[in-house]
Image 1 (cartoon, rainbow over the protein chains, first blue to last red):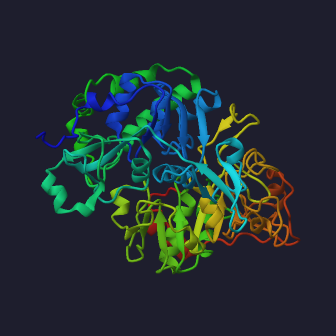
Image 2: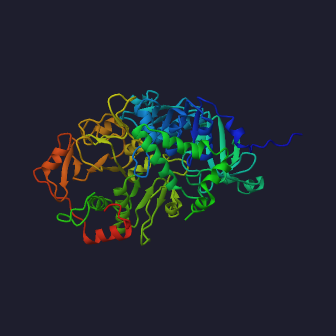
Image 3: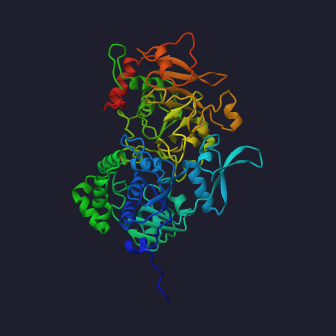
Length: 292
Length: 266
């Protein structure tokens, strides 16, 4: 008899799933260790389902051809994420215009095996003009105006969570956030990086807490969401994101990329593993990111 | 925004926070999105001044913090320093599962363009959508929220003809569409639509029948002519335009000591 197959993999194995041109969905908080791997490998022509500065970072690194995003604000007083803004204005990336309810409707349709789901938010707006995949329809029962949102099928969902056992049972701490489970249900493959690998007994002790039952791969990536937060573990490293925004903003304004590329080299391309990255960030800095 | 001590005992942002706070009723659900410091302060001020049963929703975290001497700042929606006060996550796995009940909810929204019917553009500016002159941040959840919430407020950081335009290049949230009191009914949008549009110069509401933007009050030291000049569409101006009511000493004290003690609005 073969033993039950383990789904715990190392970074190289997980990343072998990814290829140029794929549709890759990123959870919230983003699995930054895997995002850095994508940059290091130099994947190209990706369709990225993401909203936030990690999307901007992937655009800055030249990995993105198209994005399905509901929000590309910069935060920290920057109204629009700079690399996103520059690339969109120059036509270097395609934006599949949507919003939160439209995105979740499309993901839900994929999970449910439906061609589309109807949604009301966006009726009367420019969204169906800008995104012809969104079709204005008339409800066959009551004649109401709605939008048909086509199923959105990510090839891979990359997520960050609290813990998993080696068999791909994932448990979020403090809830799964708002988007991760939509992505997990819609995607063909699910890869989850976690803060801790726990014994199967620990999962079975509270099976209700399992949020994703059969992830294809799990990876152990403590501090793996840095510079984002990880519920129950650490808070966002806002100063780190401000540093990124400073160099990304300068590059977007001037077209001069040297500082931005140096930043990407230092934090994404340079460290050959997650451990190397954490060493570069430094234990003192990480320890300042405690919960309160 | 500047403090003009000659005409007002506070900054324009503080004035607007107090104005909005007074318009919020106890028991309401107040949802504030990202990057809107004036509404953030307004809902917290209202909560402390007269809203012990208000529910504050910062991104997904729903909280009642009326008992606190100082109300936490939503510096970052999922930060434990804020969400430790949450009693539930309104979006526990699904942000839009219960939009049918959003008539109880009040929302605040900004825009890079707003037209005379309160339609909003967060998408971008420019004729060619593939080569926008200015690419905006995107719609976030505002199309769904503005479709369903009981009422919302448009909060602008600047009042110029570039922001208040005759027609938005793109519409990400429908206010009163092409105008008329039945504009939203015709589209089947169940929510109550925008109530006020507030700017650094004035407060505007919407004419009962036409649903066109109408000057409601000017801030201390601002003239009606100044507002008209700064507005890119013909604004309805009533014969009498009052001055926006200044904050009371107590409102300002609570705002500065218990809400905005870092002085973000000063």
